[in-house]
Image (cartoon, rainbow, N blue to C red; front, side):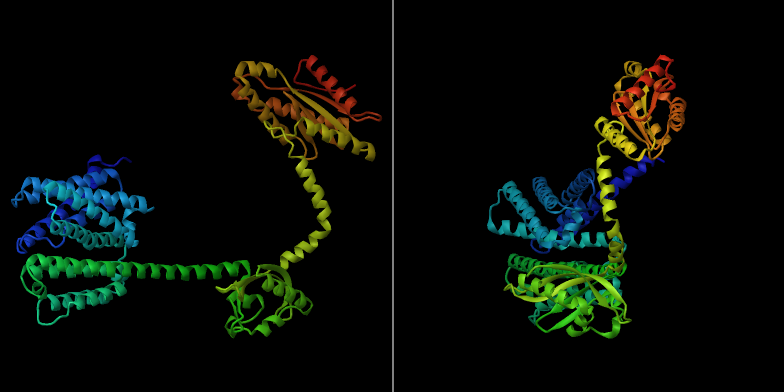
Amino acid sequence: MVGNPEKTGLREWFWPIMTGAAYALAALLSFLLARNIGGSVIFWPGIGIFLAGMMLARTWEARLATAACVATACFAVSLPLGEPIEFVIGGLIAEQTCVAAIVALLSLLQKGPLKDSIRNFIPFALSCAVGAAASTAIASLWGGNLDLGFIGSWFATMLLGILLVTPLVLLTADAIEQDQFGRVMQHTGESLAILMLVSAATVAVFAQAAYPVAYLPAVACMLAAFRLGPLGAAAAIAIIALIGSFAIALNIGPLHLVGDISAVVYYFQAYLLILTLASLPLAASLLRREEMLTQLKKSNELLEMAEKEANLGHWHVDFRNKTIYWSREMFVIHGMDPNAGQPTLDEARNMTLPEDREMARRVMDTSIAEKSPYRMVGRTVRTDGTVRSIESYGKPELDHRGRVIGIFGTFQDVTERVDTLKALKDAKRAAEIEAANIRQLAETDELTGMANRRKILSVLSSAIQTCEESSEDLSVGILDIDHFKMINDTFGHAAGDIVLRKLAKIAKLNLQVSDIIGRLGGEEFLIIMPGTNSDVAHEKLERLRIAIEQSDWSEMGGMPVTGSFGVASMTEGADETWLLQAADNALYEAKRSGRNCLRAAA
């Protein structure tokens, strides 16, 4: 079913339009706030919203739509507020350059979706710094303002706008997409309490100037990062930035003790930047640690499951404290209770069958002396007295000086395999002969998959020798496809190849397993029938002739496909040349008789 094109178009434009609307609201609030701070902007949230929208966009078309919506929002907000149009154009070009540079860098650094780059904060932050620097260069050149104060302020404003807003948007979007808010929403009460603590600590700092407690928001932010992960850290930083910005606008709090409004803005920007660079990487690292621990737990569960299915356990010997560790499956292999506690080294050694202990000791000593892995098959005695065959693999563990401090290894119960190998030992020679026969059968004709001329003639020679030695019957037949040249001339060689391949399949389906067929060349085939007298051979080949005649040859455009056969049987004193010549003469007699028939050698 084809979707409604109008609805599809609206869906494609929904998020770009939402990004533009969010940008417009953030820009409006920033402009209004800036008028109370002497025209200074502490951070520009619009750039963070713009970048987040571009990173969440899945196609280049969506990114172009997002950029267009943001540009429209920029003009819609700036011009009515009386901003000079040349300033608006220059700022927009600087913002677009910033976002384009960041997206390009992240596309090179990030293998997966761009939104996942927030999990690797350092490359993300460096890309944002490059984008902010590019934006600063454009803004300075456009306005002809190379003052270091302007350059530093613009760079900090752009960078903070990205670092404060983009992670929050991306992490929230990721949580929504995953249908969970991870650690933040796992315990709603704790999350709200921590974020309220961040708010209270920030208000306590920026609503008064009597006490020097500027470190409190940082402590609360670190707590949010530790307990709630990156999303909690990003939310905490955003709360601190908003409350601090309003405090500056209202001319309250300790920051005004720093100096004039420019100094206050610079100080607060540095404060936010340091807070961001300290808390977000910490939160990302903690998140990766948690993910790694979860993956490790899952891997251990899968390992235990795999060991159980494979009847394989692992062990470790520590020479420093002379202890041994067994996995759960090790206890199962030895018929012991896994909850009985780890065995001692002597107990583990005594479980080896007495006859195998010396061999096991030599293998272990050699491995330790040469610092090389070992593999051996021995026997162990279970607690119920039964003996099991065990394949053991071990590898010495070395310290930083190259000294052996332990051995890690595996135990696998291979009793069934050992018993099977023992039973197969007597049949080894027969298996080798069979393998040799299989290798000989590899000499096949590429087109039909049958034995080629050299192979089929070699088989014929062996069959004649066997016939002479055992006096058993042997018959051969030669098959020639009727009018094959006409098929090639009429339908082309590709059609001829199809006929050859199809005929080969028909022959294999209608001959016995003991019969061997091979291609002599062109459209001629040799059929060797060991243990078959002339009457039985005649019946076999007649069935094959009828099968060829009655097969579906519709691809030949109505032209029938048939075969002529000549058959000859082994007689006393006959050799390979005589047998082939006799069958060939019978074949030509069949052709002279009108084709599509079978003739036996006289």
